[in-house]
Length: 401
Image 1 (cartoon, rainbow, N blue to C red):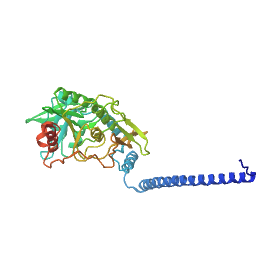
Image 2 (spheres, helix red, strand yellow):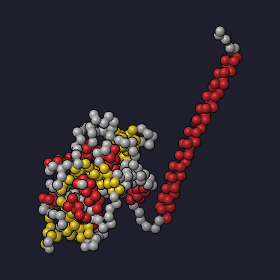
Image 3 (cartoon, rainbow, N blue to C red):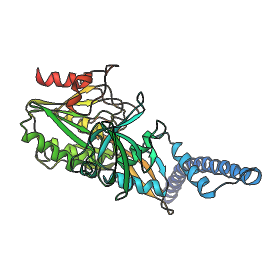
Image 4 (cartoon, rainbow, N blue to C red):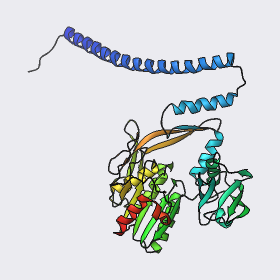
């Protein structure tokens, strides 16, 4: 049986509904407003503080100052305030060099190490096909000067940096000492080798020093070389590997992991702060296998893209990790360019591995086999240094036992 209500009651109910809706809306709006005011207030205080400093400097500073330098350092300080290794400011020239480096450009094609005891910068490796090889530089050569600047303990790191990267197609004059004889050669920058390999018997070794645009191609070539030598087991050395981008590390993982048909999900995903997917990483090539097994060497310097590769090989049960916990910095950065040619690198997402693990904020990947480096060890860059590297020895022993 239907019941009718009076017109007065209907109007009263409508009024109550409108009042309730208005009250709820006002409550929500007030919360939003308070949040906005709080954020605006914080930003206002920040800008006011910077403005006050600027006024004091311009009014009272005794010396001269450069506005461009002030702006650059202010931007750098702001990014440092995030306390995030992946977020930083680059001036215009630094951004150009960063772009070249990520593309795998620059460098003469050597690895070098400064011997503090002897006060010498020693070439430890010359890469195949590089301009350094064409100039007949060899491992063991002692670099005395570059472009007439003598090598010292104070500038050795900068000299190594200039030889490994530098401006593409720029030449460098290198004076070196070999067996008591001094020679000067001119070499052209333009080659960055990030993957090297060696083997002993059926055990192969690959060292990755960074993940750049050409790293996957180099990795593939070195894999083919080892396979042609009949290698059945592999050591991948990611110790101290922190340079480059996660995207290029994913391209290397693609060579070793099952294709998309075999693994229905993405092999990894980058997730933003709000939980949305920033990017998926997939695998679409046939994976390379090593029936004798793969061991990945990791340490506290293994970071970013190197952690992704290690995590993926672990999650897919393709390899065992040996060493100590990694850095815990498996994140994604986006580059934002500014009007003056400078840029910032900003961490925008964390990477979630195939096994749904995240390794960031300093919480790294724990190895399957804990093996701290012996204090007397010298970290090797090939199997030639097997006798001096305790972690490399442990990995080799596991593959040959």
